Image (cartoon, rainbow, N blue to C red; front, side):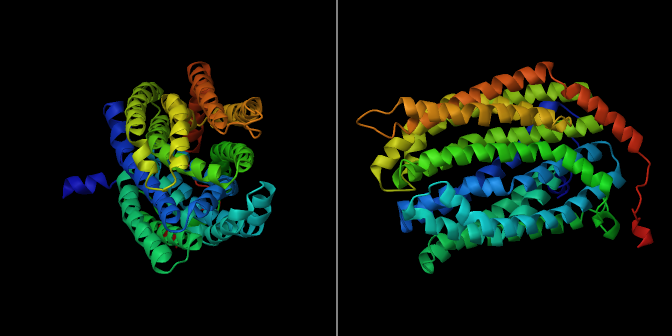
Length: 481
């Protein structure tokens, strides 16, 4: 029982072999990310099988817009995760409590803003992307329902990020597995049982995410031995909010930049018609399983580095960066092989249309050449963010996603046009992705080797030393309430 309790407790990543601490943290998060990908894929499987390929395309074409709209929230979530890991590593209970409380209040404000803008802008943005008429109505319905329920999505992601910042990736995993099962059950019930189509998938997702958010909050509310949660910590403090924004806004801008690039690429994909859009969605769902280890190790590296910067052990952070990246590359190699062997079988779950499956596998074979590059990119970006240098990954993303991926994709499609294929070859879009990943990995490696993340970490250590023991204006202790 004691051992089980330890799994679901905050984890100190400043002690022990770096690779062990990283692996202990990354594995449950990887299982959770795969579970999340499974229930996202279940949405697509249920829609594709029981509603049709056009309905599948409408759900998938909504995601670039959704990710663009929540970019601000992603910045807050990242900033909170970094600040929590650093203050937890520094064993500063007051600053840790304030960071968690302020993130809860800030998320409420941002969620309300996203909800209003998302419901209003969804049809405008879909039409601007030349979304095919055959799928636009379902895409609008999906987005509007999702934005109406955005509070569940935002609070689950930010509160599970807080748990991960504390080193507790097992609790987030447990909640995710539970609500993944709930999401799948609701998908089948709403789509097959009630015949709600795309709207049923959207309702199932927001209900499941709301349950996850409540469970994460209840878990945090019981962690009184680690931090305090009361009115004083929930009250927004200028210094804490500024620090969250400083640490997180580059990631938010990175996500906005990446999503903008995805929207431009989506416009190019839409020009090929609903069948190609459906093929892209299926291939991206399969691709997501190969990408999950990269994202998991990237987040693990952010928490590991943040805690060790908080503990003033920069050399340990550097060793962890090397060991974590090597593990991520090895896992990416295994996932790539599995995808090439079983990708066709996975795709057949989404659709009966053989032409979509054949073309989807061509897309996956192109992407498989870049999964190990993405492992390097994600891990080293995570290290830099954990050290407090969030600007460097943002600029790299800007250069590769906008400056490289978009023009290269359009250029390759243009060069592939023939009298037989006047629109060009959609495969060229994926060669653009491969070039972007490879360039991003190289630039991130050079930034890690020669960049400013070490200097930024030392500045952060000094700032925490200066703040230690100071009580900000307006902060009230638990006893005083």
